[in-house]
Image 1 (cartoon, rainbow, N blue to C red):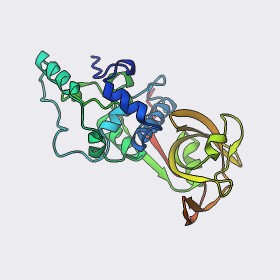
Image 2 (tube, rainbow, N blue to C red):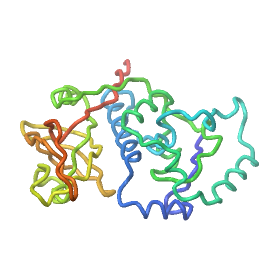
Image 3 (cartoon, helix red, strand yellow):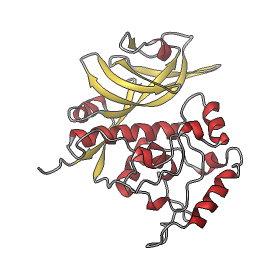
Image 4 (cartoon, helix red, strand yellow):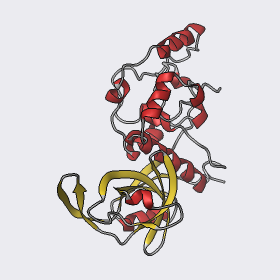
Length: 273
């Protein structure tokens, strides 16, 4: 049964459209959820769990990953169907504007690990069965009736590049990239190599979630979603950072590290023939 609770973006509630347009980039939780479902979709094909690439809902993870609330997240009463009155009440609820920032204050900042653990715990609806990324409409109380695909597997992590390479031999790997501006904007898809800060004019943006798809002796190939644009770039494996620049302050000294850190994958068992 197809029970999408939100219309396509073009027909979103005005509050939803305003929130999306106000964002310069996806927030950290949205990026983490988007990477998590990409890793899951890819891994399920690699391990022959899904016969073809299937898109799962990132917004479901934004809405449900992280610590479970003590109330408000209970399952819909078992055996109860959805009545017309339930639908009318839900439509009335989403017609009432949320107070600005209300949802952001209630939601924790999610990591890719949070999202993967949620998927393995609760399963995932397919992309078309849930709200789009960035949807601010209230999740309906009957959302637990929306079909979810069971996810059976485990989360594997590695702290070093060598550990990340071991994971990469079987599937695409999630990681975090130290991002500096304007250098990240100057690397075009398929051209040039991102090498981190180039001089005093560099600004440290922070860590961003990325998917590593391949590597060589000196560079890794990855996909990054930055400023709402997704592109494939090459990143230096030889650059070592020992400090991070701070606007108007002395650079922060850190333990020597590469540009890529915190490697993670969802691991599934192959489907039996």
